Length: 377
Ligand SMILES: Cc1cc2nc3c(=O)[nH]c(=O)nc-3n(C[C@H](O)[C@H](O)[C@H](O)COP(=O)(O)OP(=O)(O)OC[C@H]3O[C@@H](n4cnc5c(N)ncnc54)[C@H](O)[C@@H]3O)c2cc1C
Image 1 (cartoon, rainbow, N blue to C red):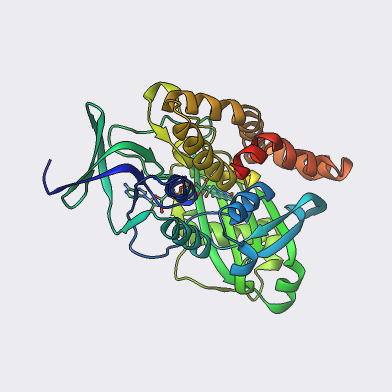
Image 2: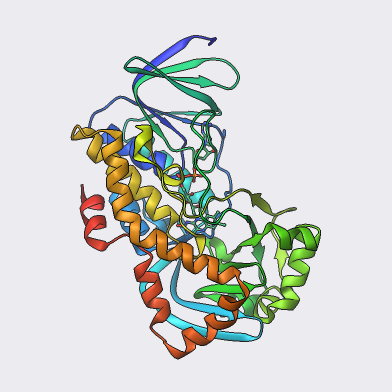
């Protein structure tokens, strides 16, 4: 180990929704907290940017109002497969906001609550020395703390790697677009899900009426297409509705963001006695649009249990209990959606049972009574 050791009571690694939520709750309880975030400034992340009502509840309780940041409302969900298109009302009003804006607002709230936020600092290793934790930084330097909360999202720390999920062969992509005016209007108030061979994706408006396209695809299909440009070109032909939405659209970035692997279905083991938050604790299939609410919930639950004297293992066990039903159902549905049979049946099933999408949306979420307790505490 090299560099000057710095010390704090509580160290949070990662400034996404999970880390910020934990940091601001600890700081609000009067604890000394330092949050280390590897990126120097606001940045985009691969995400559908769909905020479920549970996520919105947590954000508001934390003092972040997504509508004030320009979030768009979502009341309808449409499902498009090849040439079929069905739509259903969501059983709640959701919002859509870029991670660029949201994560910064949450970090600012953490700072305002008294947490020290250190940016441009990447933790490479975590180790325990008696009752003290040590976080080794990439470029030199060390932080010591009596408690560490690991909220590094998809990035695993050396020695603390997550296990593979039940569905681990998908690659995620995201790109922001400016759609043609009539397509922007047609997309208003909706989250559009589209299915295609080997994957699925979503399109919705975010602040300033930009459109976020986010999808996951099997590696084998991506390889066949020779990469993202070939995939996008063929998806526009394969899914007529997506082709229509992107007609006359301009990509707002030079290239799409990508992420791999995504361990869908992963839930942390209580045995490793580490306070894991967000994607370090559980990774839910992205079509549920529930990853951020789990991240916020885990940050709130972990700090509540920590402050009450529980162990990390007890917290991890409790979180697993909250997520059991939604994780197993969403993983099974996600596996069916990328498989041929599920893709063919999905639009007909939804058309036959108009409430099915509402039921799926409700069933893949954390039970309301658990959230109500978490958001209020
Ligand atoms: C394709 C796809 C679509 C999705 N769509 C949605 C959706 O529509 N709605 C939804 O709610 N969820 C969605 N999710 C899930 C959601 O993005 C995640 O669940 C959520 O971002 C997890 O939050 P987090 O705080 O755990 O991690 P992150 O948001 O990933 O934050 C982790 C932070 O830690 C920092 N960091 C990483 N490593 C280090 C390190 N070593 N040292 C210091 N800092 C570090 C990173 O820079 C980052 O800022 C989607 C996920 C995917 C893959």
